[in-house]
Length: 555
Image (cartoon, rainbow, N blue to C red; front, side, top):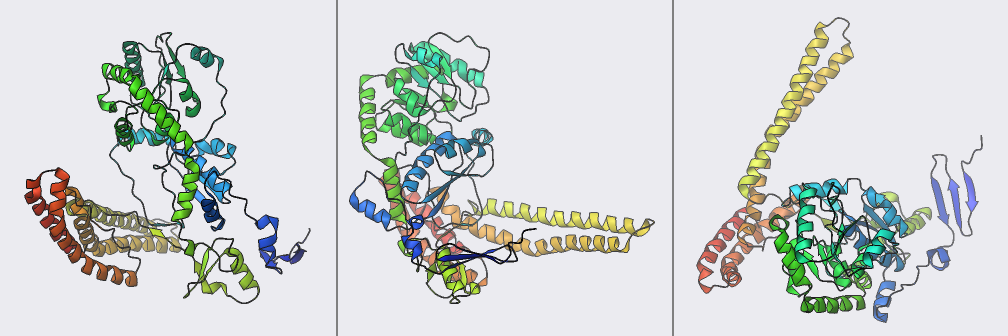
């Protein structure tokens, strides 16, 4: 057997020792090599933006960035475009999304991480629960990249169409109809509605089957309609006269970039917003919510979208968007919003900080820590993970009564679970006592399990009043949002006695202040929002309610 323990390898200034516990001990003899070696140099930031923005990018150390995206291809694609631009800026990018998109991400040269989940099931769930909002626990991250709503992040696609599609496109310009990842309960009914609308409008059409599998039933397809499978939006939209779609952010951006009018049929989420924005800027008619969609209304919308004024406006917007560089703007925005004081290692400034020396403001990267530890200048028990920002997604119940109800149900379930565990374990204990050949250790195990159950029930009996009152307070805290008072601060995070005392002192002071702020300011804001001077009296009532709830809840 070949023994590699304590084997030393000299790598030109860095010695690596394989220790007997299997770890690698890397000792860097020449720290300057890390800033002069080509391996540590960051690639130049290739951008069409200004010189000042390039210099700003160079001032940012190379970061490891994970972009997590949940949703459909239209949700993923803009982030891949942003990821490619960030990679050109010298960062290491990993896209964390569903396994369905692994090939798509890796084909563009980005790292991939599978977060699990089936996006088709997610879309089906969203269709059935369009008002549901996700909730989660506290999580920590250095930097958060949100959905790119304010810039157009476009990704060019190379595509070779099948012969049938090429042949269909040789005729008069068709319209495009596709709802992407939307899954409907009755695809046949929707397909028949679309075919009727196409006939009424007197147009040729390409219908994308999408995840909803439109046209998969045995239907008679007229010669002026052609069904297609997966096809890049930026390619197909260039070949059509207008686009009928669900109003997803990615699809909306692609249609606008190609200069095509949009007819939005929103289903849920942000889709109604994009539909209203398209109509507001004159790039399409008013959106038609899916639940109100009829063949005559869709046919009328198609005819309106093909009017010269709307087509001209869509072309102008498309030219404007194509002259912009959305991904460069996204990278610049990302760098601009970074807190540069929290970025760099204090020793190797080209690398990001990942650690902090306890009790100080000194920040170090992993390489800097390794240098100091290897030279005996720092002990590992003196450092802690650097967490510049923490986000709390648990904003609590929307009102005090539902908060109390759900807290009571949760407490009752925990108590019942503990008592049930106690009963089952006690039954097992007596069975082991009276059966022949019972093992003494088995009795002890059953006894300990029964005590665990009664302990769990007892703890939750004690905690129940605390949890219920806390939920009531959180509900009071959020209640002003119900009548439009959004001057509600996020609740403080409590992780122990010190943070609990800090949170309590802040809420005691700011609760009363914010309450009287609403009493004074909200009546006028309410009247201004309603556009009626005489609505100040109802506003005064809501302002008084805000004052009471905020003062009682602490914020």
